[in-house]
Length: 230
Image (cartoon, rainbow, N blue to C red; front, side, top):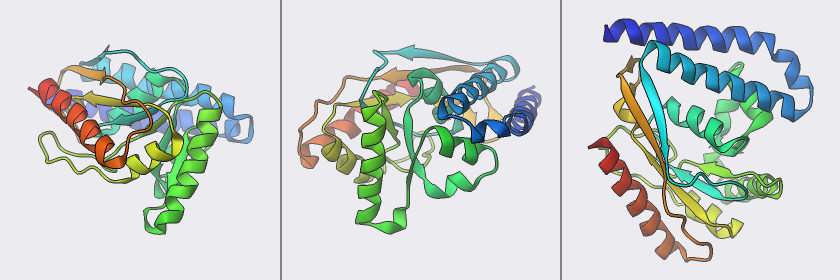
């Protein structure tokens, strides 16, 4: 049954991405808000299929931030980007520039949410990322970053990168840590039934030094993640 449910969702996810992506291609030539509406609809449709076929639901705890915040989230699966995009409503998401080359997905991400970063570019990458993030905040939208830079398996040692501290220091806004347990349910192809909790934690005020900020961020996210996984 687990294989069947996982397979049905995989087929559903691939089908809606291909069919909806092709039908919506003309939106890439229009204003950004049209592509944003489509992308949100696609993400909600994917999460609906996850609930129907794989029996994976979602609940939210804590205060969902609205406005110009920096949101730093644990990253375990594709679910994270889908759910955060829907819940936060039109965030700007920091991601690898190479993801923009993925057909359909990358094209729409580039049009709607992307704050691309080239990790090989060094200091210039932080400058370009900061400029793009400032543009997002100026539109009263939140900025999302995954501090570990890539997906981590549940229970894996934390691997927080300095980019989040650099962005936090440059933007001068509060940072909202986010924890969840998506890795316990979305494990690659396998989709294990249950409820994923998306937890918005106590905000970290702006103005802290990197040596203060990073331990607080990691402690809050990792402590809450361990509790949710348990």
